[in-house]
Structures are given as structure tokens and as C-alpha cells.
Amino acid sequence: MQADQEDRIQAQQSTKSSNTMALWGLIAVIAIAAGGYFYFSPKEQVVNIEPIATPVIPEPVEVLEVEPVATTPAEQPNPVDIVIPTPTEPAPVVEALPSLENSDELIEQKAQSLTQATAIAPLLVTQDMARQFVVFVDNLAQGQLARNQAPFNGPKEHFSASDITDKIYLNPDSYQRYDLYANALSQLDEQQLLATYQQLSPILDQAFAELGYQDISFNGRLEEAIDELLAAPIIETPIELTSVSVNYKFADPKLEALPAAQKLMIRMGPENAAKVKQALRQLKQALKQAQ
Picture (spheres, rainbow, N blue to C red):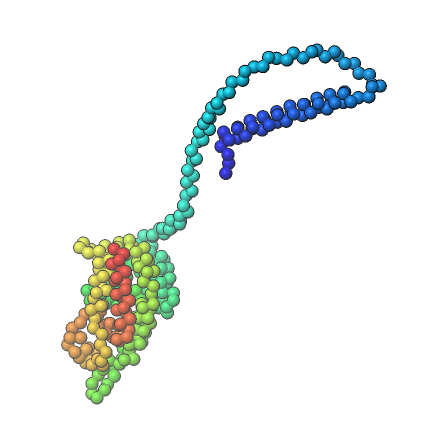
């Protein structure tokens, strides 16, 4: 710790006083030594000595005892409080968002980052991604499938049915067409997904505004789409079909009356549908917590 300025001045005065006393002591020692030299010198040496005057002894002077006066040490300045700034984490860098028209590159980059640990990345649709996604979600919320606006290309394998005892059933092998999608969705990091969604929300909101809705936000529309898929039943038993021309329908009228989005969940099979629902529940919860 450095001394205050007053401490330095006092120290210098004390040193000067000590040096002065030492100097006078040195002079006294020389004088005494010289006197001794003269006193003990041999007689042969002639020394001219001035006559010494008789010393005048002064009368004794009464010495008054004076009580020492208590001295108050000079007030020292109060130490200055030194505020050491607490190191803080650097502020996160906010990535500037492109316009809706120029957003494909950023959205593709974010989508690739989200899905890089899965095998679904090559199936991403990379043109007009914000608008495609918004329209697809809007249709899902209404129970419809906008296949041309899907964010991923659909499975290449075809739907298949099996004839069993003069009846047609959905072939369980068809469920495997959706394994890739269900596994990818279930493997997504929901926190990373939520952070990406929040970052891209301004772009998605702008794309959603083009659809002309006045009474709902895109976030609200996304929650409606999630609820629509969660409402789909999970069928564990064989599913009977009927054949109409080249198309198949569910033989059960209740299943056939379901919205197309929920029918898709059924065609995924019970295991894949369960994975998708679990992922959607987690995403829905994360969206609510972030609001």
C-alpha cells in the first residue's frame, strides 16, 4: 500500500533530524579526539597555544517543568473506496435479420443446424422457406395438408394395403415411410428449436401478415396447428380400408371423418405418432413458457 503524502513528509523530516544529530555527534568526536591528541603529544613538539580564558560559570536557571501537550495526529484523509468493476459476460451478439425476400439463406442455415444430427436435412425445401412454412402451419391449424407448401419433401415410398380374408387393411409396413420424420422431430433440441423460432419470428410474422389475418398472430396459429395434431387418435389395432377407384379410405366412418392432418398422424402408425405427439407437447410447453 502506498503512503499518504503527509506520511512521506514526516518521514523526510525525521530523517533530516537524525542526520543532523549524527553530524553534530561526529563533530564532537573529532573535537574530543583532537583535544586528546594535543593533551598527549610529546614535549619535543612545540605547539603554540593561546591562553585560555577563565570560563564564566552561568548562574543556575530555574527550570520550569512543563507538562507535555498532547498532540493530535494530523487527520488523515479517509481512504478512497476503490470500486473494482465486476467482470460481466459480453452482451450476446444480435444477428441482423434479412428481409423476408432474402431470408432463405438464413432460414436454411438455421434449419440445417437444427437437423444436422438427423437424416432429414437433405429433404428440406429451400425455396421461399418462410412463406412455405407459414402456409403449411396455417393449413395444419385448419386440419388440412398443403403438400405443395410442406417444409420437407414427402417420403418416396408409396402407401400400401394388404388383402386379408377378403378385406383390405392398412399395411403396417407403410408406417416405416414416416420413421425418418418422426425420429428427426423427436431428436430435436427443444431449447435450440425455441431459440431459433424466436429469432426468426419477425420474418415469419411478416410472411403470416401476407395471408390477411387480423385477429390472430402466427404464434397463436402455430399453437392451433399443434393442438390439431395432438387431437389425432392413436390406433393400435389393424385399420380396415375401403377402395374407391385408385384411392383408399378408412372403413370406419369416424376415422374417415377426421381432418386430413389427423389422418396423416394415423398413417404414421402408433409408434411414430406417439413420438411426434411427445415432441409437439414439449414444443407447446416451451412456447408457453417463452410468452
